[in-house]
Each structure stands twice: as structure tokens, then as C-alpha cells.
Image (cartoon, rainbow, N blue to C red):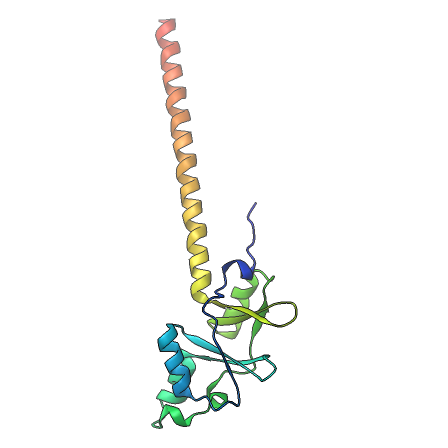
Amino acid sequence: MIAVSAVSEIMSSEDTVTITSESGNTARDVADIMVKKKISSVIVIDKKTIPIGIVTQKDLVRRVCLKDISASRFPVEEIMSSPLITIMAYDSVDTASRIMTRNQIKHLVVLEDDNRICGLLSVTDITKHLAKILLNDYNRYRSLKSLIDMTNTNTTSTTHDKNVKNN
């Protein structure tokens, strides 16, 4: 039986970074945060800490870099992707994958039951998870193959021994 993993089991929680909207933050501030923290997205929250948007590297490229204007002139609210697409921590990784595919996104903000942010799920997190599953399957296959080979060897040697006794 295959166990279905919950989003909370594979999401990133340590590198979840938020900034507050309407606080004067700009695209330049977001880019600085991404470079310093080595992350690819920043969640935008309102003054009540409710997540309202996300700024990704893709947003910076499409909404800032392609325009010939300084990044410090773009407020975060103008470049963030909104409305924010979220998932609950208890939802399955399969559900998360379907949401990401359907919406053509690479990040999902993960929420607790009370709608507090508890992490961020990325395509990279899912890829790492799938790689572990494949490696485990491969190792199980190798173990089973070894057992089958040993069984076949023992069967062949037992048959050979019986044939020698009978002659």
C-alpha cells in the first residue's frame, strides 16, 4: 500500500519569508531579500498577517526587469501575484501538484486550520520527495531481486544435489 504524504511533511518552513504590504517595500527590496536569503519567492501579508500575494523571481522578471524603470520605483503591491493560491497543511502532495499544474505556478503558500502561514511548498520540494520515493522503490527492487536470485540459486543447487544422489 502506498502512503500518501501530506503537504506539511515535505514543505519548506525555515525559508518562508514575508513582507507587509503598504509598508513602502519595493521590487528592489524584494530582490535584495531573495538574494540575501537565497530564496525564490516572498509572501506578501497585510497588517493583520493575512497572506494576500506572492512575489516570485518570475514576477520580478516579467513586471520589473522587462520595463526600463528602476526596481525601487515599483511598490510590492504592483508586482505581486494576487489573489494568492494556497493549500492546507493536511492536503495531499498529489492535490498540491494538481493545483500547481492547473494554475501554472511553482509555489503554494501552506496554511494551518486558522489560516496562519506555516510554510511554502515549491516544485523543488515535490521533486525531492518524488526522488526519495523512486530511490526507495529502486532499493526495494534490488533487495527483492537479490532474494529471487538467491532462491533460484538454492533451488538449482538443491535440484542438482538430488540429481547427483539419484545417479
